[in-house]
Length: 426
Image 1 (cartoon, rainbow, N blue to C red):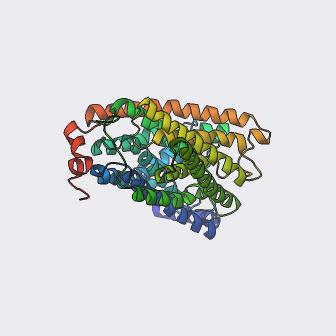
Image 2 (cartoon, rainbow, N blue to C red):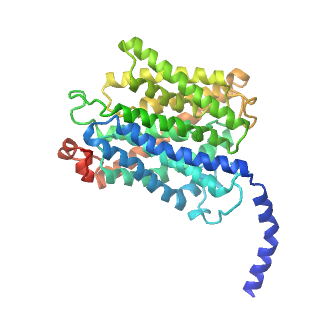
Image 3 (cartoon, rainbow, N blue to C red):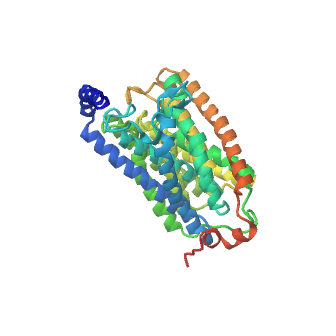
C-alpha cells in the first residue's frame, strides 16, 4: 500500500519537477560553474600572496592554512553551513536546518539564482564561506597554532559566518527585509574577516620581536603571483554574484577590473610621494584593496564610479596600514587595514553611488535621489561589526582556553613550518 501511495505522489510531482528543471538556463549555469572555479582559485592565490609576505620559516605553515580551511569549510558547508545561511528563513535571523546535509536539494533552481541548478549555487557560495576565514588568518600569521585555527574555523563558520550571510543574502534582516546592498561580499566576507581578526588580536598578541626585529617579506615575486591569481579569480567573486550571465554580470566585471586598477595606481602614487619610491608590494596591495572595496558595489555602479571607489580605497587603506604601524598593532598581513577599511568604504559607497539603471534589482543611492539607503548601509555595517566582534572574541577565548591559540616561544622562534608541520622550504 505504501509503495502505491508513494508512486502516485511521485507521478503527481513529476510535472512540477520538470517545470523547475526547465527554468534552468545552460548559459547561466555555465557561467556560475566557471565563477565557482574562479572563486576557488582565490584561495591558493591568497596562500601565495600571504606566503610571500611572511618570513621564510613560516611559508609552508602559512600556505597550508588556506588549503586546510578550504577543505574543512567545504565539508561544514555541505553538512550544515549552507542550510543555516540560505535555508528557509527563521525570523530574519537564521536559516532552518531543513537542508541539513543538502537533503532535499536536487536539480531545482536556486532562489537567489533562479536560472541555475541549486547545487551549483551551493558550491559557489561555499567558496565564499571558505575564503573568509582564509583572509582572517592573515592577521594572525606566524604565531597561531594550526589545530586552533581549524577548531576556530568550524565554530566560526557555524556561529558567525552563516548568520551574517543569512542576514545579507539568505533572506534575513539586513538584505531582504531592510534592503541593504552587498553585491559581492563587502559585509559578508571582508568586514566579517577583518572584525574577527581584530577580536583575535586582542587575545593572541604580537609576534615576538615585532617592532624590534626586521620582518621583511621573504618572496615578493610569490606575492605578486598570488595577487594576480586573486585578481583573476575576483571576476568570479563579483560578476558571478549576478547569478546569471548578462548585463549585470558584465557591469560587475568591468567595475571589478577598473576599481582594482584605480586603487593600485592610487596606492602606488601616494607611496611614491610618501616614501620616495614605488614598490611591488605597494602596487599589489593597492590592487587587492580595490578588489575588496568594489565587491559590495560592483553590480550596482557605473565604470566611472568604480574608479572613484577604487582610488579612494587606495588612499584610505594606505593611510590605515600606515596608522597600524604607528599604533604598533601587529596585524601581520594588513587584514584590518585592507579588508576592514576597504570593505567598509565599499559598502558605504554602494549607499552613495548605487543605481537601478545598472541593476534594476538593486536600489538607488544618495546621488540618485535615495538618501535613506546610506543610513541602511550604516546600520548593516554597524550591526555586523558588533555581532562579529563579540561572537568571534568568545570563540577565540574558548579555543584559547581549550586547544591553546598561540604556539609557544620555542615553536615561534623555530617557525611554523618545522614546529607545526615538520617541513621546510629548504
